[in-house]
Amino acid sequence: MTATVSTSVAGSWIDGAPVVTGGGLYQVINPATGQPAADYAMATPADVDLAVASARAALPGWATATPADRSAVLAKLAALAGEHADDLVAEEVSQTGKPVRLATEFDVPGSVDNIDFFAGAARHLEGKATAEYSGDHTSSIRREAIGVVGTITPWNYPLQMAVWKVLPALAAGCTVVIKPCELTPLTTLTLARLASEAGLPGGVFNVVTGAGSDVGTALAGHPDVDLVTFTGSTAVGRKVMAAAAVHGHRVQLELGGKAPFVVFDDADLDAAIQGAVAGALINTGQDCTAATRAIVARELYDDFVAGVGEVMGKVVVGDPHDADTDLGPLISMAHREKVAAMVARAPGQGGRIVTGGSAPDRPGSFYRPTLIADVDERSEVYRDEIFGPVLTVRSFTDDDDALRQANDTEYGLAASAWTRDVYRAQRASREIKAGCVWINDHIPIISEMPHGGLGASGFGKDMSDYSLEEYLTIKHVMSDITGVADKGWHRTIFTKR
Ligand code: NAD
Image 1 (tube, helix red, strand yellow):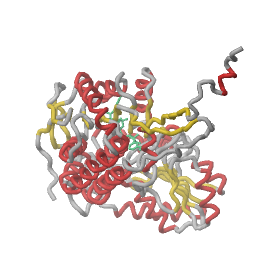
Image 2 (cartoon, protein in one colour):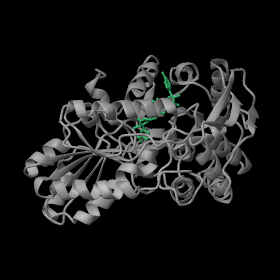
Image 3 (tube, protein in one colour):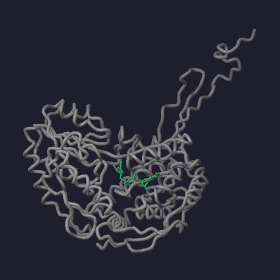
Image 4 (cartoon, helix red, strand yellow):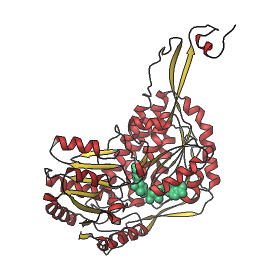
């Protein structure tokens, strides 16, 4: 497959049509080559106003469409996305540098399945039974779309992150304005186009592209946006929350992670080694749930370090368009410099670089798979999100120590525990503070199950029926069923003497 995307694209999608907006021209760079992949006109804050107005105008029609009608459009979108899978893969590979195998087997089919899931979920918005809870009234629950949703997404999984935010919103009857990361807008724009082709009314799904500093802040702090959903770094997530708080608007935040990977002494060592390499290197480690802190029983420590080092050494780093490539580049040269600088500082903080720790001699922002053993608990590589193909390892003495180390982080997005002891597995799944705990695996996600963190990893859920809660308000409707003017409870307020 040739995955070169070289067309000039309209940078925004507003009111059901492509719009060449008034911001400057932005060049999307293919990180594998350093060469331009596409360019587009960025939006301005005035375009954000237009997009939000378009979403507001489309809201009454979409919010009152029947679940069956909403579901039909979303199901058509899933089918169209499946038919255009090759185009989506090509765009995703060229703008992110992710290996074509990952985009083909994970990003795109996962996104199509997620769209399909929400097409079905649109018809299952249920609530508490209508009933006479007081005796004198019938109570019922209305679940109503929260309104206009502003969404801001990152560059690591551009299509999946857009789908995770936009689809539950649409299923719930909301209208959306999304700002993808300026580095990677292509698949989000294609998704909006396909949604229009699927029959989504104009204004229901708008895209504005551009930098976080102007377009992002304008959307996060927009007075006419009812909910802001965000996936990205913890630092920016907090700014988004502050901007939305000015208007008292609701937010949902999916932020950074620093997932522990706990290997107990009874674990299947080979499975743990392979799981650690896959969990650490997925998407070149640019994954919020990636395994980053291996915490390994002292008895297995040396064999684990040797095994992970050996498997990492066999990983094929290369052209992401080649189906044999395992590891693509980091998103940009600037990001590679950040990763390289953190790794370079590690030995000074007690870490031992077992393998990797350098960039291969080739164009593009590549960085070798890196294993750092014996890291200190206070060291930067152990505490802070690196977001690169870097795994750190520490040992533990007993189960209490293992779980203490697993929870010794401000983040709480994901974790895994490796053991053949059912009681240990149950204890780890209960005591590790994270939105997801895998047992004897690390990374798999599924549309039916929620994704989301706690602590510095944010709050609220993506995927699954749980995510619909973010996009709905719950209204209690209470109707008198007695027809009596002189109601019993009035006596607590006044009596007619
Ligand atoms: P980022 O926070 O730098 O940017 C995310 C988005 O916010 C981009 O679209 C950016 O343009 C925009 N933005 C930047 N400044 C802004 C501002 N002041 N106001 C409004 N918007 C602004 O994150 P990134 O580097 O694109 O992505 C990597 C981060 O995303 C990592 O921390 C990773 O852990 C996190 N992430 C989390 C999840 C999750 O589900 N928890 C999933 C994927 C990525």
